Amino acid sequence: MERVADIFQELHRQVESLKRQAAKAERYKNFKAEIKELSLQLFAVKIKVSGAAKNYRAGTQEQTQKKTKWSTRYATFENQLSNSILK
Figure (cartoon, one colour):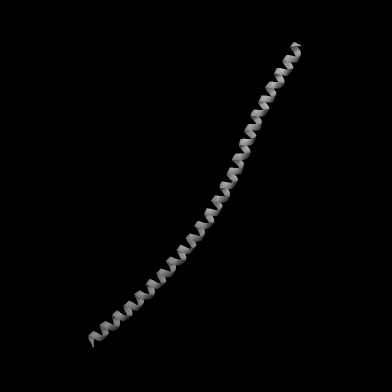
């Protein structure tokens, strides 16, 4: 009878150990899923930021071209005005 009690006690200890291992495995599985979800979200944010940066660069380039155009026109008009005054 004592042997049966020892076996029962050992089995109970092993079952408890397996329960702890199963709980750890479940937490790991949940963490892994959360990491995957966060990685996908990060990838989406990187794509959005990349697109926004591209649009910003294009807008900046366009504004620089407009500024150059208007600076040239201003210089031309200023020269014409100076020439008109000198005549």
